[in-house]
Length: 136
Image (tube, rainbow, N blue to C red; front, side, top):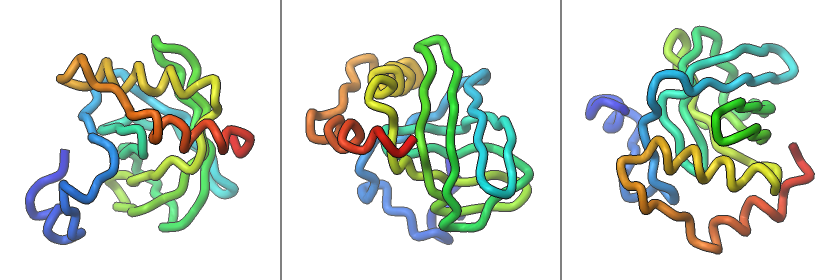
C-alpha cells in the first residue's frame, strides 16, 4: 500500500475512506482509456470506491476515463475520475459508476483480494452504483 511518508504528504486519513482498500495480488489488471491516452495497467490496490493503477503515463487530476477489467469473476466495466496522479508511479482513481450487472463481480474481486473472506458491502453502498450504471 502507501508509505507513511506518502500518507502524510497527501493527508490521507485511513478513517476517511468510505470503503476498505485491499492490496491486489499479481495478475489483476485493468484496461483504461481517456480522450488522450489508453493503457493496460496493474491494479495495486482496490476498493468498492476506487483503485490505484501502476502506470508510467498518468492523467491529470480530474480527468475522466473508462475502465474494463477482465478477471476470473467476470467482466467489470466502470467509469472513473483521477483523484491523484504520480507520474512514473501511477494514478489513484475513484469510481464514478459501475455497470449494475458488473457490481457483483467487483464485490467478488474485492473479496478475493481481501484478507477478510467475510467482507460484504452494505446495501447503501451497493445502491450508490446501481443507480448510475448508464454512465459506463
